Length: 103
Image 1 (cartoon, helix red, strand yellow):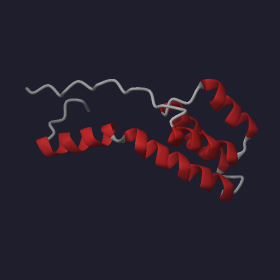
Image 2 (cartoon, helix red, strand yellow):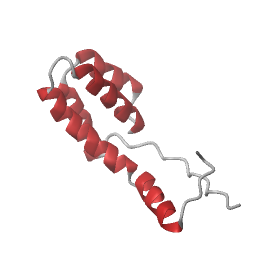
Image 3 (cartoon, rainbow, N blue to C red):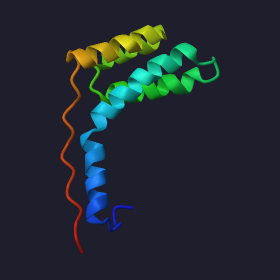
Image 4 (tube, rainbow, N blue to C red):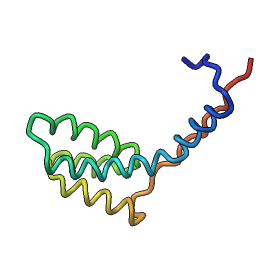
């Protein structure tokens, strides 16, 4: 898959996506908090798994992620979102991707 030839436009779109990924993840985590309140018991495990992945990607300390998952309370997810917005939890700096090799 890495051998694909992307146009300049496609490369810029992909780069902007990854540049804005923390903001997108933060928005998705806020939406998940709402979905967890309203979800049926059947959907909750998948939503909690998504919330775990997002919290880890956003730089939430592992102990806090474990605490939120153990309590199973959507309000805890909302508190994590609030802390991220307040700057108490900062996303890990993303490694700079290598530019695609031109053949």
